Length: 189
Image 1 (cartoon, helix red, strand yellow):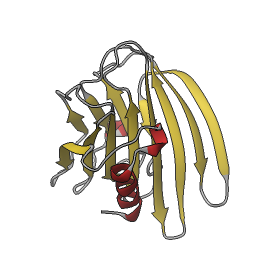
Image 2 (image 1 turned 45 degrees about the vertical axis):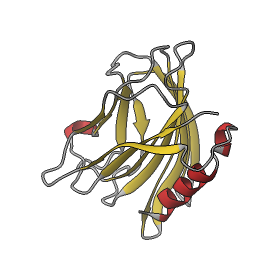
Image 3 (image 1 turned 30 degrees about the vertical axis):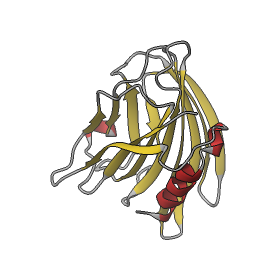
């Protein structure tokens, strides 16, 4: 496991302080994992997600044949129901922007780089049917002194409980062999 994923995993298992929710050991549970085999895969899907947790977390190490990050959709929603904000840095430059009326969550882990990138995504109150859903993720990639790191948040304008999460490789490409996606549930108090 890469150091960034391991560090976040340890912090999450010890106490999910980023959500101001106290978590005890064992409150962080594996739901499902996918490792891409030879030949690659254009889509990774987690379906039939149980509504028994307070929050979800996805950790991924991925590489795409098109080198442009990942797209995600909740419950197969392809409408313009997503909005996002992004902070990104490359070591020599920084940027920030936002977009409304998007048809997906965008995760820029590799932006044209040929190496594996990582992201850790938190989906807050995913099963709450009284509010829109918020997700945030950290992403990054090192390319021997170049690369990028960023923080992004997305709003899915739906009150539906999230039962399916799809990760789509951009521009008709595939996730490369050994790309790995892991879905975890975070129990509430």
